[in-house]
Length: 224
Length: 413
Image 1 (cartoon, chains in turn orange, cyan):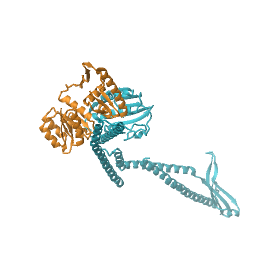
Image 2 (spheres, chains in turn cyan, orange; image 1 turned 90 degrees about the vertical axis):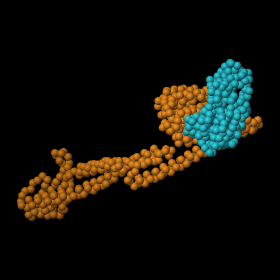
Image 3 (tube, rainbow over the protein chains, first blue to last red; image 1 turned 90 degrees about the horizontal axis):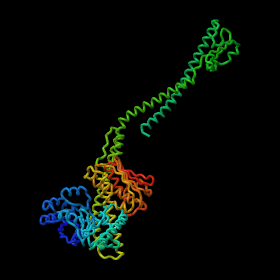
């Protein structure tokens, strides 16, 4: 997957690029509107992660250019502004998703992957690991053609983990992914614990492996 | 008390005092005048009786008494006074004036007494009092009527402007528009009010701008903090460092929630939500409830749903925020196993849950950063302010009640 990151904040850019590269994405970056415009003229990308507040222009104006060049390019807007108008304008011009700062890298990764599956792979992509197959659209999960009965939340949780494999995912990141950010964390932490236990049990029962490790005081890590 | 009533009361009081005093004076002077007239009349009558006697006529009249006597009679004074005489027809004692005088007529000494009927001063004063009270009442009544008529002209601008000031909000887009008047005092007040409203609005805009800018500027540094802390989480860490890191992450999460909440409030006050359309509120409730179903299940809450179809013209994103905030509020403030209910009909939506009474005044419920005594510090205290603001954006009325151990939030459309 070839990604262009348009972001003017160097630390954030570095963090995103490092994480994406660890997932073997081809990652390029631009820190200004002009620079991004140049890159978009010269190359084709699968996904553009676009910060809309750039020092020399409004990122929203780049959306049209991206679409003119290659209609299939997925676009994820980043914004610190929480502006509904920007969001609507972006979607009308053809953006695929919108994420507000501050965000978790795992969330960004999950969304970029979702766009990629939807756009480049036309939703046909299955996520497979270690003999387990997930079909994100139908939320069906099978191990060696045998259905693993997961609840919807367990399924969402599993996809989140698989997409962010080998990374310690904090509990808050999971809470926000599953329920949004309105909830009392203590209650949701307990609920996550329950989901986690069930998911581990079900996976253990079918594949005989425990993929999820608890990282003390921080969160969970999925490896296979 | 209304100004008009107050003026009328004073007016009536003043009329009663003035009319009472003048009435009393009039009564006294009238009585003095009439007594004098009667004395003159009786004196003349006595003189006429004396004339009759002089020409040798025998005077015989019921109310005239003539006594013959010696020269000692001349020493008696003239007397003018009143007395009571029994009235056979009325069967009552009636008051009479009488006048006594001694006269020397044709060498004989006479004492002549003449009488005339006494006018009842009691009924006189009563009649006068009634008339004057009538005048007082009439004055007050007409005064009030005139005041009322005047007030429609003079006071109307004040009353209209008062209503406009009452409805005025610094957060509204329109300035304070007052209708003009030709009364100097009112003119001055209008000018002061418009100026005050203008200044209030300016301050408010500046404050809002500041909140928005501050929240906005905080997001990027927060993103850096958040991602860097997550990166540190990937490293092998000592248990004590994990603890420190955990606290730092919690604080960052709180800060980001507060700034996001404040930003949302600032935007709500600007009313910049453009995605308004007709949407089914019952669907919104179901969708949000489904999303949080597992959280409700985990707390073993008994949910009673009673949703009728209801269309509202509102922003989709705001309705999601409204409903999820109210659900979160229910979820966060109930004990395990409590009863919660959501009822939606054509007029209103009601969220209720069992729980202990509020630990702070009810008036603070919808204000920013209010948290209960035992509340978890993870909460940012903005959820209900956002709910209230969304309601007022849609011109809906939200109210809170605590009854029979139930916290009840009701939104009237």
